[in-house]
Amino acid sequence: MSRALRAEWIKLRSLRSTWYTLACLFVAGLGITALASSRSARDAYADAGAAWDPTAHSLTSYIVAQLIVGVLGILVVTSEFATGLMRTTLTATPRRHRVLAAKVVIAAAVAVVAGQVLMVGAFLVGQPLLGRQGVPNADLGDPGVLRAVFAGGLYLAVIALLAVGLGTIMRATAGALATLVGIVFLVPALAGLFPSWMAGLFDFWPTLGGAAALATVPDPNFAHPWWNLAGMALGVAAVLTAAFVVLRRRDV
Image 1 (tube, rainbow, N blue to C red):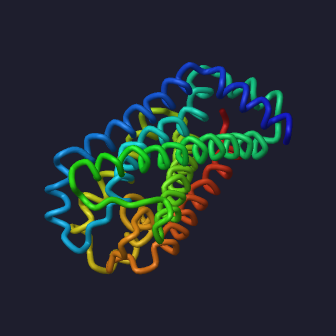
Image 2 (spheres, helix red, strand yellow; image 1 turned 30 degrees about the horizontal axis):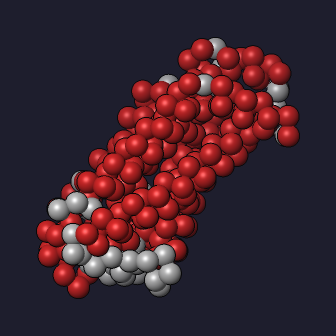
């Protein structure tokens, strides 16, 4: 397993797309935080009133960051299918579950580190900007702030694992990315159109219940945000299980 991990790390860091994607993650994430903390923050504060959450406002960059991290997770798998390198990889490591397990570990490690750095950076950039606008801001030592920032990095890591699973099942970057966009953007946008009996499903859905842990002000719709995030993680674990089964049974 240690050799498989080393091989996956070498492959990932050798791709230019890896570094371009990570650079895009920080530029887009911090840029969105700066924009959200500009003059428009006054309007957001006026609309929120007592429900104003400066921490969650600074961490809104996760909405775009999850897509960029998802692209990274997808490419961990689909780049090898696209180039035919997967055949070589599976010849060198015939135990397919070991190959995918190594990819999962490497993708999770990179995503959680990059995601956590982004969330801390977004908070540190956003709060002073909010203060300059005369809007109440927060400090890392305030109740619930560190928890929310940590949850942001964890959330992005789970999204990366979801992307790895989708990439393995579909073996195509475009198809996996379209599915990921549907999961994190389309379904939440259309949540109000689904039958009431499906409401419980959205308690664990990405960008809805799964992202509730990134706030410090309680949301009455998601009273137990960490359970919501844990439920989302279980759903992603089911996708990864399906990915392991598909990789073992299907020809490359």
